[in-house]
Length: 329
Length: 257
Image 1: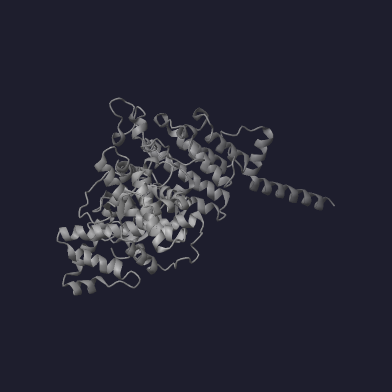
Image 2: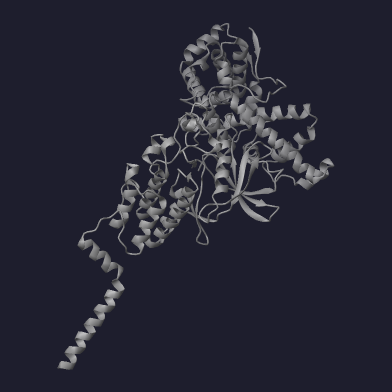
């Protein structure tokens, strides 16, 4: 065996890592990022002359669990045609056996990187509303995301807000079970085993801090929309004050985040749409359902909402009074 | 002294094999031998270099100690104690070697006694030549290095060993299937000129008298097979699917960010 220099090893590493796109219409431009399941590459679609993002499984595994999960993610994305959800263009298996799917290339930045750049609170809240809209749409299609977090939200260069990474999404049917891609076995106990949020070794997938308590407990069979509502609450809390361990910021918003993140799902908002609506009400200076008001708080909010009109009226009254005094002299 | 030929070219590479770690602990003698041979084949060079550098042993001492270590690994079935859920095989072997060399005095006594351990045929001259070619000179700051730096050293040497074995297998595979040109192109483009700008596909096409598209396809084939063989070999070197995935992603340089 000839001796391999460090340069040769690095080149062999690269040669082994790069996906074999020889039988496809795609050409790799560069690697964008690597995640837990695979790597995302920037690629050129030679047939249509456009740039796309290719998500490709890195390593084959004996069980086929990850390949199934990646294809399942592509199918779920194909069902979710919404401006707030990244569209999928193509899916398949490469010559080297790796499963992939092609999606729209989103050029922009992640939500977690936006917050650190000092965007205003109203701007952040409007972004949050759009995240809620996308999630509400998925819920209407009976899809739970189950891994909502700032790192999985992309903000495009032209104001797009896109919810990404649906790798452990759950498809609900009328009975609360899984779709055909993860059908329970005859014994009816395969919900957990076939669930993409649980690995073959029983580990729960998701992100601590953003995962609902019931998801963290592994109760995947009973999860519903309120589990994503919890994650949205955690995102709201993050948007209010990154790094805070409890809801911070203006009291009504902190109350909204607390309600969304209630330990008991029954105490949360029943849907992402309802949560988004409460945030919209805050932005409009209206009372929010999560924050009961006494007279003082109502007056304060009312004053804040109509502060321009109040200032104008007060200014008018002051001038009028001054004029009265002036002419009486 | 009985000579056990280990590490020689087998000339075959089944598409899928059981993990060598699992095989090495099998009750079936043939399966156990196959598993141990695979482990020794991939690890003897990294271990020899580790003994030379970390333990600052002379060439002759390192040869004897590496021989003795692998003889004992086989005889005493060290791998029976390996738990893939607790450590990587590499780390386990390093701890075993450190423990073994920690009792060097006893080991030296045993060596002098010349016990009846089976002798493993290993090409130490090649390993020594590799050490001389390495940019890191012996004793150049590695001796007495931290456990992390030695883990890193072993990892790199294991990668070198694994890729070297994979290249040998790829060459045999290409020769068996009449694809010598594929292998030669791979060698020229990806290995021999790795420290300089590689020749263009057009240059290679002219050199081999084939079309440029053939160069593209031949290289894609060789890289695909090289990847397959490397991952198959790595799978043999790992004790569980989780460990395989972790190691494979590190091997391919695609660990999560």
